[in-house]
Image (cartoon, rainbow, N blue to C red; front, side):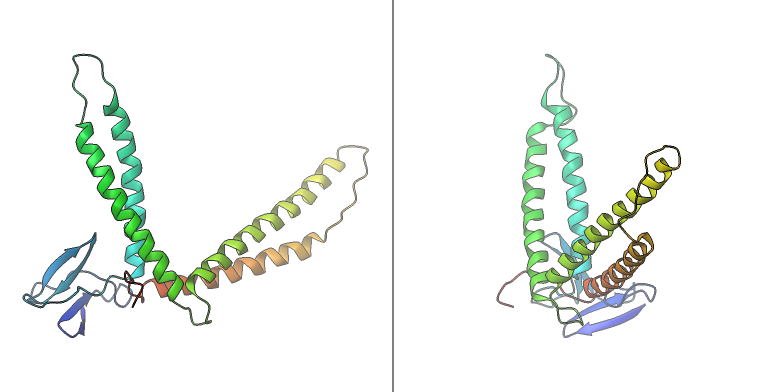
Length: 209
């Protein structure tokens, strides 16, 4: 375990985790775990102030978990919404609705904080994370379009070999495949930079920061 301190706050980091990955300190440390707004951190008992150290990567994981739990809750609500007369629903629908409201509110707050962090954070290239995410998405779209075109040429050639209709290629498939490989490399490198940023950047929940 490695300890990183920031004033009254400190984190214990397993050496196998990314630097600053939030996790519990060792049993010998006198710190306490603090939960706030769906996130958690560690601080020394009696230490005041906001709990720091919630990384963007952790917030993204929490967002995915909340989305999964809400989807599961929708199924539980459906199963308890209507029952035969005289039967009891598997779960209390009113309680499930309360859970849905709470989780939806937390998800909305988390998404807003993630978007705010992405808009204000920058990668080493100087572009904001929001811009980098947009570029990563477009790189994937271009890959898909070019791959479809290359596959169409290959499919047409296969059909021509079994028919009398003459087909002529309008694209250089080898060049297209090379572009696809280059786009895939760019996307991998960009994704690596984004992931590194996610685990070294603290979540921003206040636009004034």
